Length: 121
Picture 1: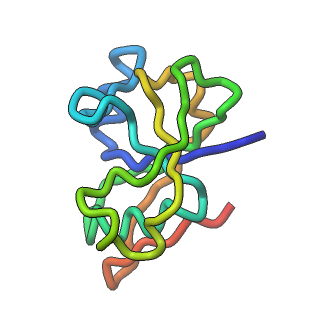
Picture 2 (picture 1 turned 30 degrees about the horizontal axis):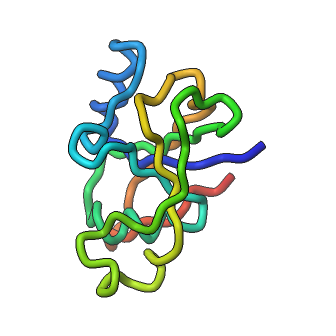
């Protein structure tokens, strides 16, 4: 099973469940939903979600996705100045996320120093 991950505020996930699908704001602004591999999730969180709480990590099964998936270079505003951990290709979902593709939700909270780590399996 191939998995990707999406960092999301808990309230946004609740809204998506009520609506029957999840539409990240980035779907309107960037044309896709930003996702990560297991190795990319913590570096992304540490770069863009510093010390935020109330987050979830959606575990998405690629075989269940109904929207197209594409692997792209990072959408960082200045990719050349991004940390090395944010280089490479990232999974992007080009459409709404169907809820049945999410096979698990994990609490995704920073430690006492505000640093994120990938949750233990």
